Length: 178
Image 1 (cartoon, rainbow, N blue to C red):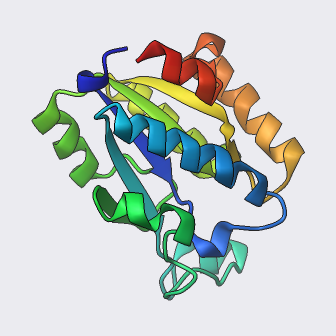
Image 2: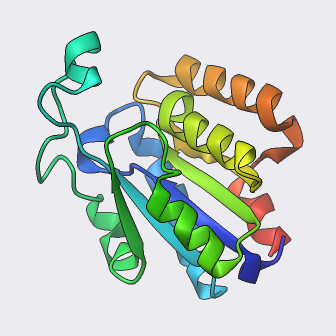
Image 3: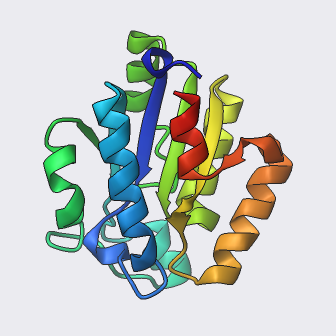
């Protein structure tokens, strides 16, 4: 992996997703972002926004993450995010048209993915990246699920089957690849 051809995607590390099941990965994510950006790597942050009559409301009766402060990137990452691109989304995947345009503009080939929720947004982003020709790397110890450890592990199992288990790596391993 070449840092110039890679991007770190920090998925939905927002106040509204920071829970007792996810808080433990925050120091790992902050360290990863810090080391990545010190190596002159590009980082992109995604933020999920819910909206009235969304599928999340209609089908799941889930009514969260409409406005600040829930939708804000967590304070610990704000200094890093201010010097990067933040993409807003209304879907699970961070592979938005705007992100695809960034991939093409920068000729990125690899995407390192970390964040919240492993079994939902991280998984969907990884699969979409794979299907769009990028090489996804899932940073397992920098990802978590609001659904708990079982949901996190289930997400990693599905991702590993879909894109190859060798693409499930720890933050320390990722940084050694740079």
